[in-house]
Image 1 (cartoon, one colour):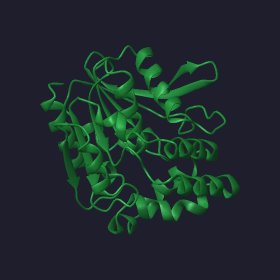
Image 2 (cartoon, helix red, strand yellow):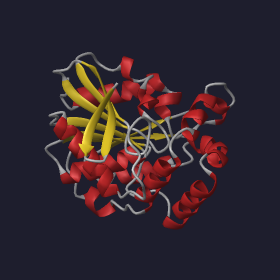
Image 3 (tube, helix red, strand yellow):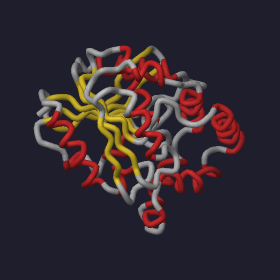
Image 4 (cartoon, one colour):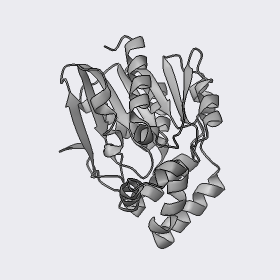
Length: 263
């Protein structure tokens, strides 16, 4: 367990696995999850990588400053983290809000990101009115009343019928309400269509066929903003295909890492 001070009032929980001197691959999680999101995938990736994952502000074991947050702040957090770890030319894998962070970071600091994976994400997710309603609901009653609806967006019906879904529901409701609301505000205020369309770097988009949060056509639309980018659909999976279909997810990700010359 490692806490890295990013600002005077912000420490982020970061974990490194793999080869300390290997090519860096950085993972950024979705709204309402922590860095355990990637547990099933990481053992299936090529050997020799330096694997870095972290809890964004307001999530997991990272500090939870008072919200609302801006996407710019979340991008600066990732930038400061990678600078502190002396990372350059990484493959940045972002899921949902993590994919928005990836887009913002690639625009701001192309020296940090040589290739990116936009998993179950988009240049713009939802509408401000929807996010404001969710923020109000969380501030009024916490995350738990929303949890069942979130599970329907996150997972396929077959996965929800099993026992494992309860662990993910517990992970969601144990996130700080302030952090969840703060990051929801960041998503609400983000529209990266113009800036993402100016990117020129190897990019892989990944969608889940049963994703109720970022439907595959939305992920494909964002992926196609970047010339040469490719899109892969993972079937029998919702918003978190790395959880439902880890073997296929790892294969798709490993192929992309190899194609970029990262191993």
